Image (tube, rainbow, N blue to C red; front, side):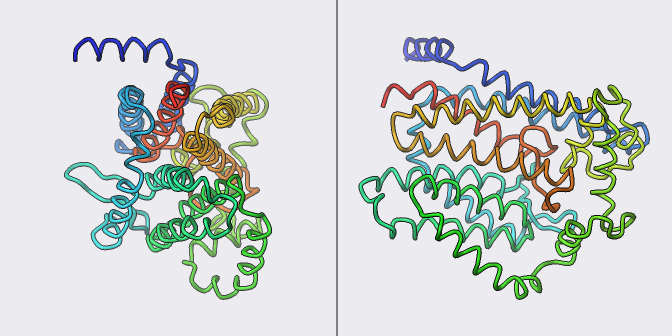
Length: 371
């Protein structure tokens, strides 16, 4: 047994993609630095301690990656339905006994810890769809094979919308849609769904919460109530623009330091980064994300089986959509829907899910020639 563990550990070290791991670790470290630098001397003690909590979750996530790479990724395939079922039950429990905060009920508390099941559902859905399509790879030419995946996506979406969490519901939809298109579902079906959605938009509008309506109105009318509902986006644009080409410098972000920029550690963390390090810093961050996504796409392209291909592509789509929508929110070209920036925004559940996603990519890279 000891000999097996030693040989497994040695093989892991030799086949481990240290560059991809370093990128994830670097983004997590940058997250801690940005959250620390934007806290400001005028912030409360609780606010100033957030960077320590983020550092804790980053370390936990990085440590979790190592044992994840010791077992073949097939193990996650065998657990796909079990994990999905557990998280589905967790989402139901959130609506019954979940912890509330900021007008939403999204967290389950287990002793001193709280986690957000909807964040973990994003990764679970990817693994579930990968398992589903691999089990039915002989039926990929038929249209009816897509019916069950759509239902498996709509159920957690409905539960997440009840919290309410429009951003995560949109993410579940985009992740599933990306995978379904790659698996052969005709784009015309999505166009038909989009047309139907547009037709019932006036009806759906009445089911939105007031704050969700306001966010959409601010997107359509950018100058609407800059001191009220439009304050977040207005201050975010000021922060990004004031960074200029090279930024104001470390700990010199006045929009964040003086608390003009709300949520500068969560949804608007990119604005705090851009204010300090300017266009060059923001561009550097995008290049790091581009490298991370390119590694995932290469794994999907070179995958030796359907499960690893779909899983790799699904993780890439999850990270890419989050990045695009979050930066779009911060710069005002997309409505604010509360989607975090992967590996950078504050949040234990978000950090852990994205670290586990990177761990799966590392696992697939390590074992891809064994299947």
